[in-house]
Image 1 (cartoon, rainbow, N blue to C red):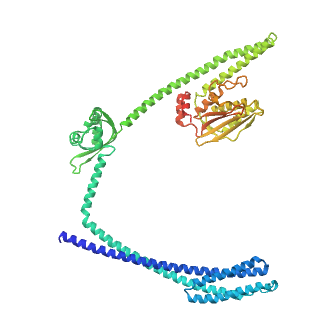
Image 2: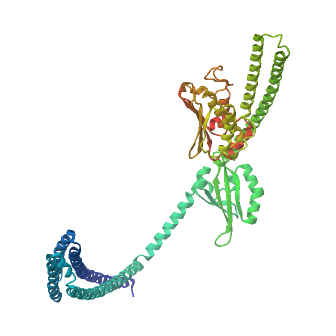
Image 3: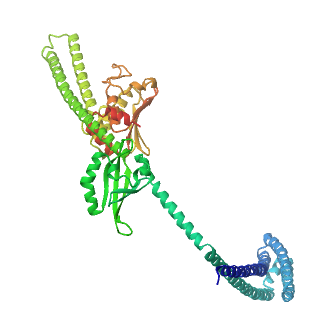
Length: 610
């Protein structure tokens, strides 16, 4: 049969099937609409029957409650029962009217309702009659009407039973109608869908098969070519029989600066390499590649058309051609010039850091040696001065007058002051040198030990210390922090009527904040920048003794722990000193960097302050 005639028959049969499907769909839609309307009507009648049953139950219950209220009034004489009875009578009468309206479509139920309504009126009239009697007579007749009440309940139960039977019939009819509707709709829809699918399949099979295949093939080819040429890496293929490049993507051409005509069929892989890499490739990599037919993760330098070079990571595989007449290799290269430059910069920085660390280590060793020498060279003359002053005071007491003894006491006091100053300077030097060993310890125990020592010398000071969270830090250095802050608080509040020192703590997401508060003389915040400097004092030596190093020591220790320290005060209103410690301790990288410098981390700590 000619192809044209086949196409005409196909179009004709397709039109017939389409018309049948359309007519069937219209029929299903019309039947569905009719069924939905019928279902809505049946649902209304079902709801109507439920309403009748509910009103019957409510009426029966209201009647019993009304009769109960009349008996309650007779027995108790409470007017509330009388009022409830009258309201109940009205409610029962209203419900009876509702029942008459709801049952108007059922003559037999109306007949039953009429007879029941007469009985209800009789029962209410009896209750009203009893209420009208004197209390003694009413109580004697209070139980009258039981048989009448039982008959009324039976009548209500009969009407309810009839309504339930009607409800069951209507529910069954509704269910059957719904099942029929569902069957017809589903069957018609499935048949319509089958016809439409048949029409669609015939159309697609006869008209679009070849066109669709051609379009898919072309789209796939275009997509593959686009992915190949615009990949984020370079690709090229080599005919290993003559080593010529037979295919190369745009990305690699862009990196190299060549055109496709300059490369394909004219150049080999080694022609693209820098001389040193080309020699390495021919000597080492190509024999290995031909043996294993695979190389991966090799760094080679490529030479661009302008003579510049870049480093690439090379992976290659070799497979036979389709006709197995020759071997074709496929090479993938990734430009890693930026990574190479970054690695070289990192190596240079690491070397520089290593040199700086060695230099800092040497400086710290010299500082430790200097501190040791200073402590011994200065203390020897001080001990001699103190010793000779004591000899003069003890052995030549008769030859020295009162003024001379006072001068000797001044000499010894200044010797002790100088010794304290040397000790503080050594502590200050050691606070930023030596190994920073971290541990978790109880801050609560540490503070209470420091306060116990202060209480022995200052029994009149009141200390208030709440429970304190533990911390990860160097216990010895943090002990010095607390000793300096607490002793300062005691010293500067000593002239108050009742010296008091309070410790506080605040938990933040990243740090613990500890505070020491006193009720001493305080200071002007305009001079707060001098507090933590070496030998800086805001009060005269005669008023409050000290070396002027304690707070500088506190600052260096706290900063070495990557914390921060600050103060708040008003003259005459006491002072508050705060310091913070990280909740999780120093990070390993910070500790290693500090220990590499062995104490020259003053600059690092300053930079690490929050």
